[in-house]
Length: 200
Image (cartoon, rainbow, N blue to C red):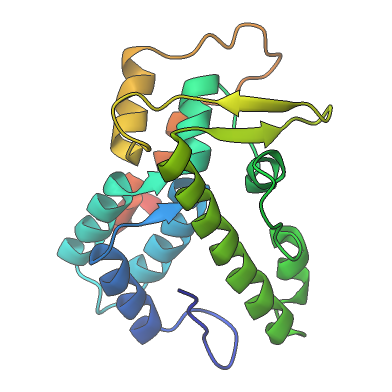
């Protein structure tokens, strides 16, 4: 599902609220949604006078219950990977172009941005179908090798909350990394989303 604001610009109060309602009513699967998409939406809701604390709490619950392939890999392997690396490894259709490119086109070529968002959504849907069928994903590394990722034990995907709980209970050894990232940082926006004054 792709939401489009017309004219493009800051997400309107009505669209932000509608998007929150849709997300909270469905199973949500993302790639880096916990650290980016949910955070962006929470910022819009936090700045909206119509979005009360309960609605923001519902969004946080939706985020914790969502499935984030990037976060799942991050907490099981110790580092995040791109969705494109999974698409290449699984030999699935690629996205039309990158998110960085879409950001450059935001104000001048909305049709291309919509095309990107649509292809991004379809690509993610294909990955979800793949992992639900095979119980694993393959990804192509930066060196061009194809490796299998099999973190799924009881069910195909872990919720964001389960990923964080597993990370806290038994973090992956990242001592071999020069500057390892912390997957828990993806949740850093939540306190301010629940209590907006914390962001002041």
